[in-house]
Image (cartoon, rainbow, N blue to C red):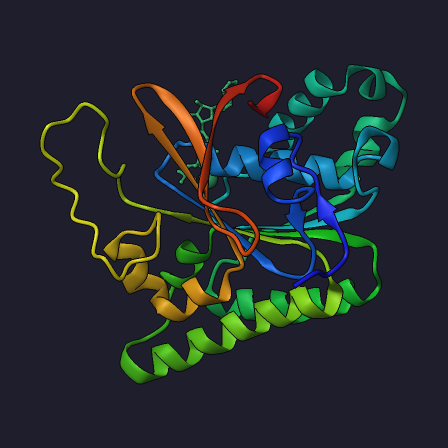
Length: 257
Ligand code: ATP
Ligand code: MG
């Protein structure tokens, strides 16, 4: 589907494979193990969405749902200062950029549900150009009950988040942690059993937490992984690209190829 618009990631190969960047109007998921760089990536995207257009940004506001208190405005400003020194030298830019990012920290599932409803109102005002949920599995683990009621509630949240993307036509980026690396290169035996029905990049814990409906709700899935000390970002699900992997690094300037 073409919803007209992309948020460039500043990772050249990835942007080309995505025909310009993270697409508007759909869900993009970042999956990977702890410490791989999902939050770093989201902070970079938040910065890019808030930057003026001449710097490749969307000149917008960002809503960042920070479930595990992992967002750091200090780190985001560091990424800005190192990546765009000329801009960040200017008076007031740091305050302006910081003021464009609204960080929400829902402490329970019901607070999250409330936040989503308020977000719907803000999105209709058209200033917000990116919504980040970091992470979906973490908020869901804060209480959904069991069995049929769980599936029902989860289904409601998934549809609601999808409809937010469709109505507002902004990119929605959602992270999810997987427990461990998949098969390590050079390892003779892999003890990591990947069930064939699991979507690429998922593990059974994530499928159990989110259900298979979640995997289908996501239009783009980016899998972050490390092999032999090198980090990779893999385009694991995309309607317009074969699976491609790009090496990346994390420096003081943030995520870069
Ligand atoms: P989790 O699933 O636990 O939330 P994550 O995938 O979100 O993990 P991040 O917090 O995005 O992981 O990444 C953490 C990594 O980012 C650190 O291990 C470190 O290697 C790197 N990192 C963070 N800050 C810097 C910095 N200033 N310079 C270089 N690398 C950094
Ligand atoms: Mg994180």
